[in-house]
Length: 312
View 1 (tube, helix red, strand yellow):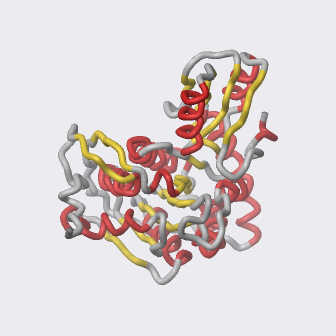
View 2 (tube, rainbow, N blue to C red):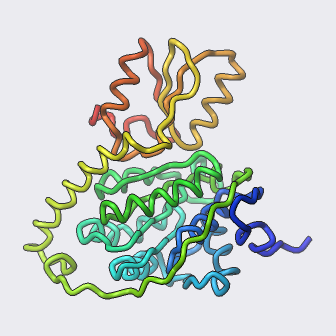
């Protein structure tokens, strides 16, 4: 059977249509809806379908799509667009962020003028990778926000939220996927497609965009201020929700939420589940309130169980 084109799978569908999309295809649709000017990647599973889908429709939507020489080039190319005021997306598998981390850590200091979202597709259980590292630690190390969806609809919607958050904070934002979300298929309601009429303008502020040490010291303080604001905004995100009622509480996020809900159903356990949409930085007030309402609370995550607990 021949592979269907992205447009046939609903990537270019009209607002309000429902389509059965992979998580990665939903990311591609969200990229189009967000009015992104440029999407870059160094391809690798489980992230490959994002740019593969965008490359098929790039000319029709007026988007520049690039397969870069490596991951750091992908980040730097996309960052150039975001620094000039446009929206840019860069996607890669988890090990690729090791290559790109040099550019990403400095970009957090510099900041962006348009929206910049980096999609890191992690691979728990190493279905197609040499390790199963947890890239949420890059968000923690870089002091940048990180969102984590649990299904294709959330993947698209969170991507749009990530661009808004990036422009509000003038920071790169990470959207962390895992294999079981990238390659999950689900019904996605399509939204409207934004215009791409903005003219990109290069900046002329050397104190901000040239990271010699004297400038970097100042920008580090700015970065910490932005992280504090992101912590306040975390409590307002619609993706932080409580599901169910019970004496036992569970805190989870992303694909682990799906496993949690299935396990509770199979075991017949009634529990109150706090699903976090932004996993860094956490809202201490949100988590403290939930902890105060339950005598026993379990934290269920893929790979790690210590992220951000120091904030509580």
